[in-house]
Image (cartoon, rainbow, N blue to C red):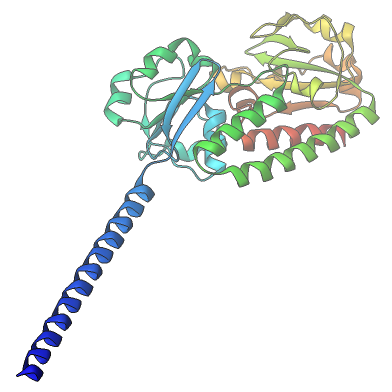
Length: 324
């Protein structure tokens, strides 16, 4: 009888142990599953970024997928980063960015007159603008986070680097940006040394359907003087958006050793090519003409896309070709 009671007691104790172990196992399993779910939920959370710029702040998710661009310099840089956009103004697209004329990219108006209805329909995650749209910033902000990127003519390299760094941060391209900035800096350092050694004074001219305008230090083309190192043939050129109006006699009087020409008519749709305008006896009196040192720069690059990554490389290459 005693043995029978002992056996029953042992069985009961064994059953209690099994139930206890099962309960513990279940609790541990549930805890592990909850922890796993928490990790998955944390990993899925978007990376929120706040960008501070000259006109305000923009809060957005990193690596936005639906991007509209209103600045060809920014478009240039995004193209180099392999970042896709969904919309842009298609008027005056630089030739080297002509792929964006394709129908897969929506035309969202002009640089100065955005099509807000079309922009709203596209439901962008991010809008990128520049100086031409500065006054419209608040309207863009009503539609989507908007970041303002522009070039400071007094500090081209500094503002260019800042803009590129911002884009790298937004689109998770930081390493690519740093590599490219190092390359650009090295190219500019080498070019400036060549220019300083050459000791030549330069005059920058924009030709627009027969009209001539000079640009000097502090102008939109100041990179030629400030970053590249050319002395100015005229230290007192008026700093204005479209330059200082000049005559052929002015060019003869200043007698630059190098002349850089931007054919604005090629951008605005004029009929008189810059080379035709400058092909006259007065210009032929200058040292620049006599030394075959009149250089025609890519108008769409210098006038429309200045500040872009590829554009900056082209600008360095063109000026270097003028000094070698």
